[in-house]
Image (cartoon, one colour):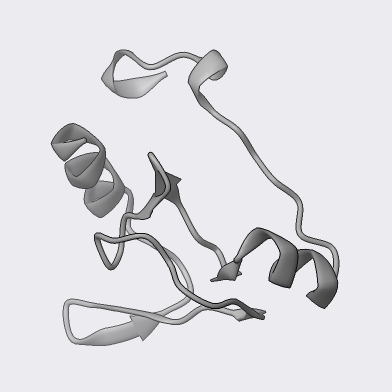
Length: 77
């Protein structure tokens, strides 16, 4: 994997319903957490939501986090 990480460091959590989202404090899909912090907002999520997530990058809205952004944030952690 990139940045020297291994699959042992990766946890993918399926959130199949609103009840699971509430129990997990889920913040829409897709979300990437590192050490419980959302890489997009840079802090731990509060509350929950069970919907598609829209991000804004380079002045455009998109449902995908650019690979470059993920890489930059992972280096910070």
